[in-house]
Length: 396
Image 1 (cartoon, rainbow, N blue to C red):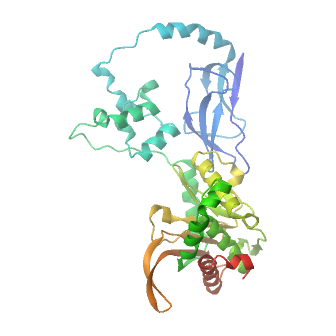
Image 2: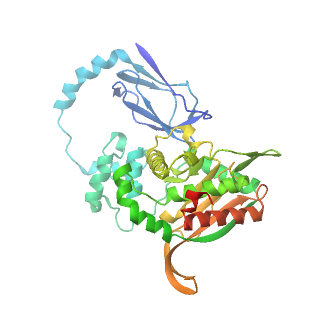
């Protein structure tokens, strides 16, 4: 019996995906629920698994082609699973071929094969050129074990001295295309301006030091800076509601709720998962939610709904060492806060020069919606809430 493998539902507002990888090829035998393909959307990646065990007899959509939900992607002959079982003993009995010089072109072939997400992540994290790794998979495909072996003995696969310089042309992922499109749209449509300030984080540092052990013991997560910044932002948004608004044609839409987008860097690009109703969460709730969203974002397991609906966004370039940056709006938001690295710097306090942990912060805003006075006032409110976090406890 032949079974059709269809493209799965892609999530809210997602109508199209790209076939990023065929993990199985025509003629391969597959087990039920075994991964056979990966789809990439502008928000998340999806796995396509075999609905039944059998032989993959036909692939209808090529790698790199687009699919919509319900489209037939492949066919599996369920009656062929007996054939797979019968051929297994013969395959086990066959001796492994002896290594010969002719096998070395595998490294060249592997560079032309698509990389699985696990292999791509491993090579990027360890700054390894996949074309220098000898692939042992089908048609020279580089497997995770090949990369690990290369890391143990990199000289074995190193290119010869004087070898021709190489180039690799790789199509932009759908996520990267979408990021590029939205950033350019933000530049073209919004009247973006950025205002800066600096924050003394001594008070937050003292609170973290005083309560960190008890916080970890009670909640199982560290008390970080993001919960303080999120709380400070929400308090400032209440005071300056235009910064939490959006522009719809000629209408201003003021949001009376606070869904904060937190930018997360992944191996596929920047994602902005959303902490919904951040005003209703305590510090532990915010830290736990951000950690969960960040982890699943890097693993490609976020739902499309978790990447939509932010009313304001925060991005932290400081984790990469940025001293001062100008963030770009995450449309349709009209404001985004940029955090930077914390530096011990000399500052004047009460007429004396002291060394304090300082951070530059930046607010990029849409001048069509927010006036300069509001923007500066908002950023000043964020600064005050961070420098004296106890203000939030008494509502001043």
